Length: 100
Image (cartoon, rainbow, N blue to C red; front, side, top):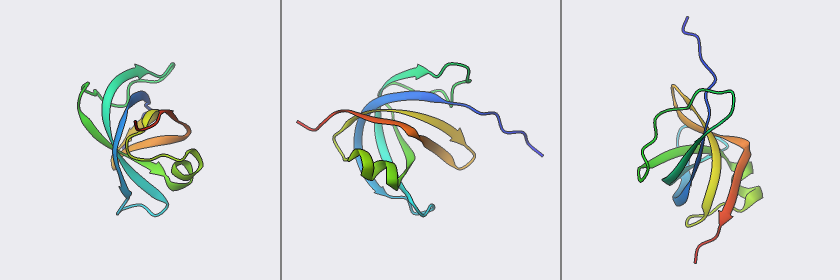
């Protein structure tokens, strides 16, 4: 058995696009242009992120709908890395800016 270690990072950037997550019911996939990475206290980093890179993250559809997340938004979100990809914490996703 492989032990999973809880990991989190806070990413800030611009949402490039949002699509239906083809592998997970109840999730959307967002593509994020990474502009800033911050540690989350008491947790090891999710993965090493490169500034300027684009990452795809699964976000619960309820979170997307409640905060009105759309392409072009600037966001801050906490993500964790799993064996099946990156996931956003549903309580730690916020829009910090809207498309101009």
